[in-house]
Length: 151
Image (tube, rainbow, N blue to C red):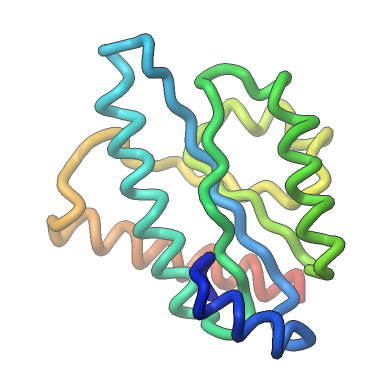
């Protein structure tokens, strides 16, 4: 299920079957021309990945709106992100996964109340290319297995 009016209304009626929330984490730095393109691409890849994962588990997971944060501010964002996780757990979502291509979150993983999933990602490319689509499908397959291990 996605964060849309239609899916949320279905969720509220069927919430006992939807026990997992998936929160995409995406960095951005609007002050740096050097990183904006890379981070914009990372955002696009993250969106496609989230949609593919949601499609695989339709009716079992809720894909959250993207959690954007300023690049390199993980320490400052940890408390705010944990507030997001706690709000989802009150719904109640039994499992809350945080997904990112940003390896800097690994340093803060122990302070997070959600389960961090970090995947080395693509820093550039074409979302329409066969290679990128193949990479994303393989990553979704591996993350799907990981999520199922928590169920």
